[in-house]
Image (cartoon, rainbow, N blue to C red):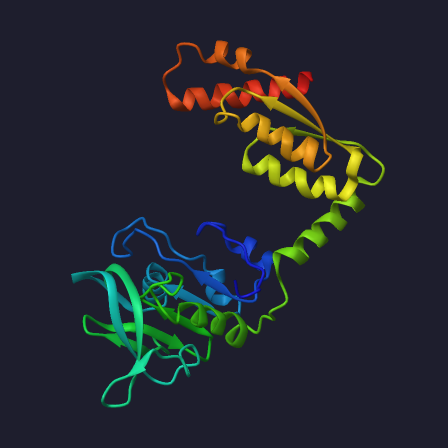
Length: 294
């Protein structure tokens, strides 16, 4: 939404991955765990040594505090819902962003809280940049290293200035330009597919699901009739959805589609099977077998 390219990765990707990825900034998300318990997620060490800004959100703030020398405790009051936060310390993250001012002239933000634990002692080099009635450290920052953290959730619509806060981090603090959007990405993807395929043929297994359908669209845009889709109609789509798949790809987009009615074969393989995971494995294996056969 801020026109910055980003990727989501799990906390345990490892230091080598982060160094190779070479991000311009890192966001540590919220999560359901507690940093006061033993075996819970921690950010890889490379997050802190990469030399790029880091924004911690909720659990991300708590693990930032715990890993960098602060303290996190289980709060007596669990917050879930609206909160009023006072911005402090004129931090770059909040500068000029407010929903209103109190009688003393302090800027206030309407935010959404969802947490039980809270930071009770700042790590060395940090200072508080926000507080609320029940959370003395609702935000913290070490501007020298570009480390910022908030206890509330800027990614939800209930935090009125949330989008502006995320944009502030991405553009002003990380220095990312506003030059990425999905339309441009499609053009790049089409060009890359065309260069990779050259004059070869491509066969794609089409299931009617999101993944294969999204893959088919730019590939066809890139190479046209060099693409052949094998639509394995396994009989497990919603009513009339198979016909919609054929309408979308074969008739409307002009994609070359081979329609394979595999419903009876699939039903026979699933007959008497009750366990959902076993069903999933049977469906996946049989789909591949039918695709390869065709």
